[in-house]
Each structure stands twice: as structure tokens, then as C-alpha cells.
Length: 606
Ligand SMILES: Cc1cc2nc3c(=O)[nH]c(=O)nc-3n(C[C@H](O)[C@H](O)[C@H](O)COP(=O)(O)OP(=O)(O)OC[C@H]3O[C@@H](n4cnc5c(N)ncnc54)[C@H](O)[C@@H]3O)c2cc1C
Image (cartoon, rainbow, N blue to C red; front, side):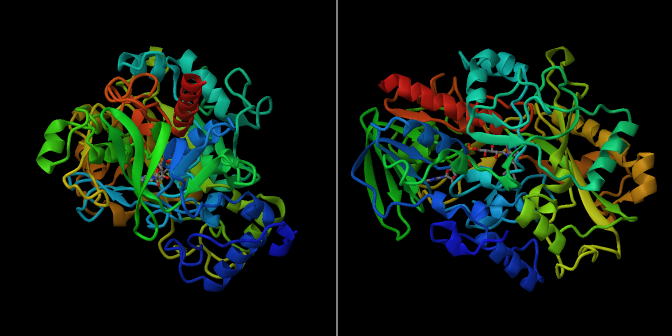
């Protein structure tokens, strides 16, 4: 039933950008206006009684200050305030979660929207050449839930060797698989134990709901059949250590057809948790110190006023791997050769920002010349969604399929696949009029567009971030240094060969008549699929993942309990604290880092 707003029990406050002006879908005003209105009116989607309200003014002092209400920060603040004797302030530069991010099929809709995306660009380079020579675009979440508002929702825990070998060897003592697993379990609320996945490798007691999306488009099953035809494995659970390799419909952070950000999963409204104050539109500019002890932070509020707030016990930075180091640098914690020339007083000389790592790959664009029904957002999809939380709007199309394989550089005995594959298309994100059965916007003239990505998960190239200004509102400098190690390029080429096999399969050729999209290959004039062509495509259509980490790594900037070395009362708890990549999607590991961070803090202050 479609409910009228007054039946929700709390007033509906429309916040954040609307779907109506989405750049992904223009020209369908009436249908999109109605769709947005129906979503707001559906209480189980807009959940007005669970709204996280921002305090007007912060108090002078709190026990703990958490900076950033993103993926990790929401968990840290949610867990700390379970202890009702702690008064916690959660400061977030962005605003509330826009309603549209809850709809899985709109998962790309808010990329590049300044309300929810920091719109980060890396330094110009000889890759990401399809992005106007201005460096790579890195979408980065802003607002409640942080990047868990924008991401593809795939749940992966990484492989045991990521922790047992890579993390521990990098100095993360106490972070082996067996030691981190309890915290993964603490976060995971798996809804398919017994029906799809094995309880030995999953937990159902955590706060984050996890399951496969309810809906899979028919094209996804064709794609799986094509993969099967090429002889590549299909698996049921990519988190089962016995099946590390294969293609799978990923389990995702969702429930009842809706995305769950960590803010939604962990942060109760003010009425239920009075010891938690959330201040939105509060941009933290620096940490304040008395000698070597963090005593509070400075932030700028929505009116442009600079405020100071004190912490009795600790300050926890969870502003993400690209921003926690930036705040540290502006506070005087970082390499002295960076800080001194800028005139920033050095509080502690540490290699902040120096170990920036990210997964990297390439995107190939295809046209399906012979397509079946391509329109996936229409009245029928909207009705399925509103009435049953099901249908095309409740999933991410063929993006919910992923695959993990070994390149020739992987150590198979470690069961640590180092290539991952993603697919994009068949999203219910755009419609001309909402009429059932009409073709999608990009049909039928040239065909229907899909794309696929091959990503190397253990890149050898290491980047850095730094600042060259004392203005905390200026973007920092991000240089991922992709391909400085030639192995990274070679491994991605192997990944492209797998995609070639899949898209060249008899099934996809016969049923979809697939070909490379001429609009995306015309700059690479070498013979298709030659080594030179692949390198050209990789540099042109580079696919930097948004899995940046390591900028405040354990063993370099923070100790194994996530405390900044040689300073008191200051921790970094987010992707930046992770010393190296999990081989897969990182949010599972980031949630475990945040759970464990809260655990360390509670233990320290009990
Ligand atoms: C497009 C995309 C797709 C992805 N897909 C997946 C996926 O399918 N599965 C997966 O596991 N991972 C995925 N990821 C990666 C994953 O989402 C991120 O690694 C993770 O969310 C990062 O968590 P975090 O807590 O470190 O930072 P964030 O979630 O980014 O949180 C940082 C928060 O701090 C706030 N903040 C920043 N600066 C300040 C400041 N100065 N003052 C106050 N607040 C501040 C930010 O606004 C933000 O809310 C994807 C990422 C992207 C961008």
C-alpha cells in the first residue's frame, strides 16, 4: 500500500537532492516527480521516525569526538554511545542521507552531486585519459553514511591471506584473520545463513543487514551462462574460503529492497540515544593539541562560523582515507618536510599520507546490438518496488554480479585471487515516460550499452596524498602513481583477456550480438586485443576503484590499537588505517576496523 505521509507517525522532512534533477536521468520530469513523491510517502522507505537530527549548537565539551559520520565513523559513534555514561559528539561535513540513495537501482545517481560527493580529482597523469586530462575522478561520499551512500553495496570480507600475510607483515600486529574475524562477525547481519551461505563463514547477529538483492534481471543469468560457457567457475558465496575463485551474485548491504548505509544501520535517532549529539554540515578543520595530547577540534559550521569543541577523553578521526590524513596535516601531524615550508607548526613528524593504495583496473564498453526488452524503469517497476520492495528498482542490475580470479602473478596456494570483475548495465535508473515496454534511451539506434571492468587487487604501485596550502577547504593533492610498477599493467591486461572470452562467448554473440562500442575505442588504433591496444585502453579508460586506503596505516602512523604514534588521545579509525588492500571490496574490512576501534576505546576507558 502506498501510504500518505501523515500515516508515518512522524512528519516527513524532505532533505537532500531529489531524483528529479538527477543528471543520470533527464527529460522524464513527470514520471520522476511522481516516483520521488511516492517514495517519500512510503513510510518504510522514508522512515521519518528514525531520522538523525542535527543539534543546533554543540556543547563545550564531550567525552569523545568522532570526526566523520561515514562508513566507519557511524559505527564508532554508534558503538561508543551504547555506553550511556559517555557523551559523544559526531561531526559530519555533509548533510542527511538523500532518500534516493536508499533505492539500489539509483546507486550511481548521486555520483558527482556536490551534496553527497566530494568530487575528488587526482593529479593529471598518463592514465584516466578519457577524463579530460584532469586526473581521475574519485567519487567520495559526503554526509551521513559517507561513502556507504554511494557504493555498489557488495559485501566481501577479503581473503585470509590479506590479513595473515599482508597486514601482519606490514606491522599490524594482532590483525591476523583469526583476530579480526570476531569484529567482522560483530558487524554482519546475514539474512541468508543456511539458505545460501554457510554459518561457519558468516554471522547473523550484526547490525548491518546483508543478503543478495531480491531481483536479478534476465540479462544477468545470460551473462552467467556465458561465463559458464567459457569454463570459468560460478560460485555461491565469495566469502566462503573454500571457493575463493569464481563469479557470483554478491551479497549486498540491503534489506527490504533498500540500501543500508552504516549510519542507517548503527545510528539511532536522538530520542533513543540522548548521549549522542550529531552535528551535520560541520567541517572539521583541525585537531587541537595541548603539547602532545589531542584536546578537541576546530570546525566550521553551515553559517561559516568557526567553533571549538573539547574532548575529555579522545578524538577519533573517521573522515576517510583521503581526509583523515588531510586533517592531520593541517593540525601539524605529518612529514615535517611538508609542514614546515607551509608554516604549519609540527606537532609530530609522521609519514601521514605516504602509503596511499588503491585497486586499479580498466573499463571496456560494449554495445548489445540485438537486445530484448531494455527499459527497466517504468510503472511496473515502480509498482513492484512500492508494493513488494522487489523488482528492478530493488537491485543494481548486472552490477550485482562480480568475479574473482587469479592472475599469473597470484600465489594460488594462499587462496588470494588478485583479479576482480565488475559489470554495469540494466539499472532501473532512467525512463523516458514510465510507459511499460518502451525501449531505453540508448536504444534502438546503435544498441544498448553495457560495460565491464577488470581490476587488479594487489597493485604494487603506491601513491601518496599531501597538501600544498594551509587552507583546509582546498582539495588536497592525490597522486595514486598507477602503473609505476609494470606488473600492475600486465595483470590488468590478463583481466581484459578474461572479459574478451566472456563477451566473445557464443551465447552473448548469438543472443545479444555484442561488440566493442566504437565510440570508446576510436582513440586506440592498434589491432584490437593486441598487447599495445590493451595498454592503450587501460590508460584511456582506467578504472581506479574507490578503495583508497593506507594513508594513516597501522605500523606507520597509528599503532595496532589505532592510536596515532607518540600522541595522546587521538586515533584514526577508517580505511586510512588499513595497511594494505583486502583482495575484494573493502567495506566489510572497514566495518571490522570500526567495530574493533570502538572495542579498543571501550576497553581503554572502562
Ligand atoms: C562508487 C563506489 C563504489 C564502491 N563500491 C563498494 C562496494 O560495492 N563494496 C565495498 O565494500 N566497498 C565499496 N566501495 C568502497 C567503500 O565504500 C569505501 O572504501 C568506504 O565506504 C570508506 O569508508 P570510510 O569510513 O573510510 O570513509 P567514508 O565512508 O568516506 O566516510 C568519511 C566521512 O567523513 C566525512 N568527512 C570528511 N571530511 C570531513 C571533515 N573535514 N569534517 C567532517 N566530516 C568529514 C565525509 O563527509 C564522510 O561522511 C565503493 C566506493 C565508491 C566510491
